[in-house]
View 1: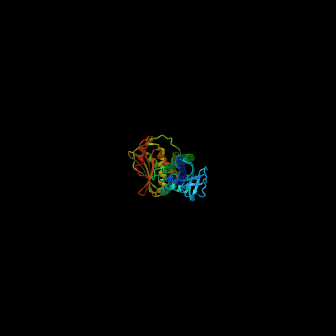
View 2 (view 1 turned 135 degrees about the horizontal axis):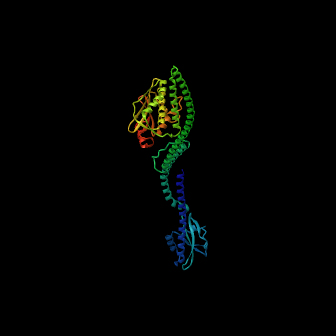
View 3 (view 1 turned 90 degrees about the vertical axis):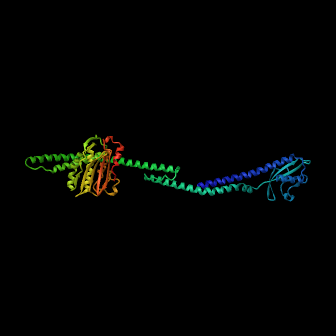
Length: 458
């Protein structure tokens, strides 16, 4: 409506100006013509006769009235004398506008310089204001009507499309203001100002979503650091006390065995359980703060054997068959304790998932690009609703779990420039830590990406 209103206002302003200008020009033309006739009569020596007045009327279109001063009436006239009745013709008076027989005339006076000087009234026809206005404005109105017939529908269509697009941008910005970050609008429609505005709003939405995710991740990492520090402190105190008690009891049992008794083998199982708890503490420390340990070479098969020894008591207790794959015969450069803690977490999760009568397999594989530490179990696998966020902190499918085991394994894998992946294979669940072949501190992003693409993700 504002666009249509502006067009109409422009048309009416143009028509009004044209009408005013036409009336002004009409009056000016009558005045100029009258002045010329007055000058001609003032300089002419020809006596004014009916024939002369008729010729002047034919040439100029004006009517002439020769005034008889003595009789104070018209002596000669190109108009009927009856038409002059009641017309205020006063010699020497100022010129003006007179209406004779319904027609308007501009009245002027002149003194003819003939043989006998005479006073002459010059009546120049003046076109009426309405006639002048219509004559001047109908071309403008015709052009304006044709222009409006084209511009109004076109303007309404164009402004309607713009209004629709701007309304979509407005709603999109409102959603962003409400916290719906990451959503975008289609920018492929038109490459104009509105399209560039949409592209800018989309970039803002994506950037805000990235910043929010970064902020959430940072806050979560800070919280994890606090939790890890608290857990580690309390658990280490408990582990130290338990080990001291077990060592004291072991010495007593050894003394009894020396006197002819038998050594209690359950003490070794208790020590192994404490070793598992200690690995959990190391994993929490790796998750809560950056590791300061220096990478060093170690035997991969020895790492697998340690994980097997640490988790064997748990698998035996639950009734799960625990197997190790063929030896990899490979030396790895990394943080051994961190990788052992990550594998222990994966193995314990697999034992819980397999349940009594199930099986778990721990396997180390190596090729020219990657080293893979995989744990497979015969359990049902994670819940489908947690597949996308399974490795994030505090995400768990266990009723008694807290969701830190896989987060520990993911943090350790990323510390070694690797990835943590999982998938279902023929009824088995496989979790794998994939590490690029080479020193942890010297692995390039390209090598890490190539290693990550060698196995399809979940």
